[in-house]
Image (cartoon, rainbow, N blue to C red):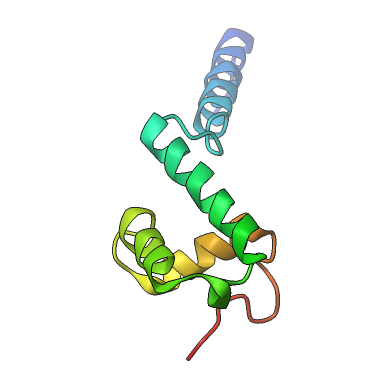
Length: 95
């Protein structure tokens, strides 16, 4: 298949646009409610010293229900990531 210069330029421009568009806002929180929830999680991280086990049961339940859609394991992972300890050997505390 032989590429002509204008066709190659157009294909390159489309590829760059798709790549930049798909990854530009990946880390941004766009929903104000989500942003408020993460601010609250950050406050809980600070008050607990970054340890899930130091949270009250009410705070754990709030994170599980409002941030992790009712599941404990993702709630612990989100909490750990906000505490800056995600990626540790065993970031999730198990009972």
